[in-house]
Length: 187
Image (cartoon, rainbow, N blue to C red; front, side, top):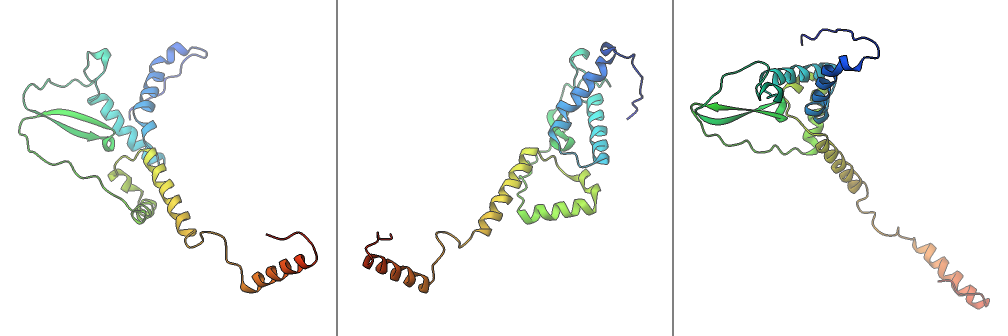
């Protein structure tokens, strides 16, 4: 990424302000919204975020321009390009507009998710092709799987278990015998 260390003097946090600000921006705008699956995945995410931060993201201190300046586009229709798997967007003016429909949301079943996890374990490079999945989505999938498992596990077990006929007859005989012995009745 082209970052070099430059040691600061001990007990001098004012020398560290720019680094602290950058780390906070990376955390708030990128890493807090993604599930990082390893060091190489984190490096790919940070490279893409650095490109976004330096070339596309507007900065208030630069009069709403990016550090790498770009020309102002005054004509054309506005188009959107997803960055970091849809976490951020880059809006540009397009001279020739081609109307396309937004892709429909992909609906995954439990078996699809299991296959996806298995494939990612075999081929980690597939993460480059993946879309961003928020942690809430992962938790929702997990909870749905948990509910489905216990629903399957408890099928046909509703209510009190059946008592064998011999045991019921024994209880009846004991109840009749207790009445004959002037003992309180069993309910």
